[in-house]
Image 1 (tube, rainbow, N blue to C red):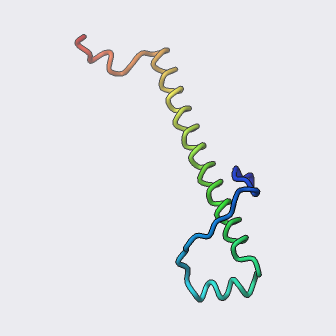
Image 2 (image 1 turned 90 degrees about the vertical axis):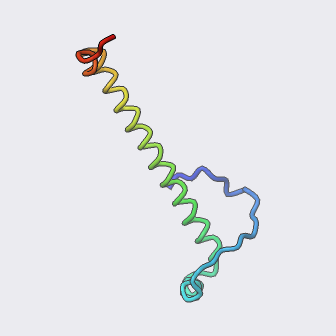
Image 3 (image 1 turned 45 degrees about the vertical axis):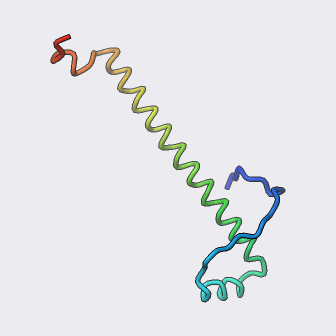
Length: 83
């Protein structure tokens, strides 16, 4: 996944509340739980960034489509406007 964070950024301790059972199971799978959590968090942040970008692109495409329609055919409201 294409991440926008730096792997060289300063690390700092944070407090997380996680299921003790889940942490025990995860520690049985990896010796670098912090690295796994950081990787998963980076993926989540990138996926959300991509989702927001896609939504913005869809919104802009819709606006452009309606503006094009209005330029070609006029607004639906034009026939009802008293101005």
